[in-house]
Length: 220
Ligand code: DC
Image (cartoon, rainbow, N blue to C red):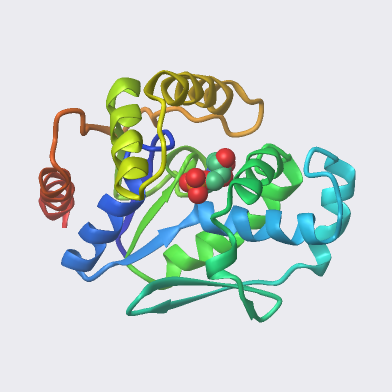
């Protein structure tokens, strides 16, 4: 099997670029953020505080996370229920950020992620894929863009959806989230030593996809 680990900060376009590249390559695209989000949804539903490490850990044995790969992409199952459409709300995002900092949660999800890479050619996207989950991946990519570029893209997305967007406050949030993600104690966001930097600042989407596909093909 061939594994591509893709890490990088939020808002760099990892998931959309990796998804398109996976389609072109015939690989399975694994969105690990969605797995963490599914755990967080269960925690919220049980009324447990996502910052309560012991409380969250006690829930883990009750959670069965399932994934199905369809034409539409990765479907997330929580104890058999399709929750794909429920895990992208701001409330779940906040809870996921807290849950994903809990070592027991990360340990619980480690094998699930490794099993996926054992059975499929994968492009796996997350924060610690090259450093922790798949340290032997044949290719490791650190996909990023400048905070200003990520803020501009986010403003564009919001405006396209007819929502108001304030560039300065979005930029501030991005800078703060980058700091939190790269300074947490467990599996902080950092490029693996043997990773290739893919900086998409100034790229249009198709360029980033083409660059990623080319990097994979070089190694195949
Ligand atoms: O990529 P995303 O926005 O769906 O990630 C949601 C949250 O989960 C984010 O706070 C980072 C965290 N996460 C993580 O800690 N490790 C991963 N492999 C994937 C996501």
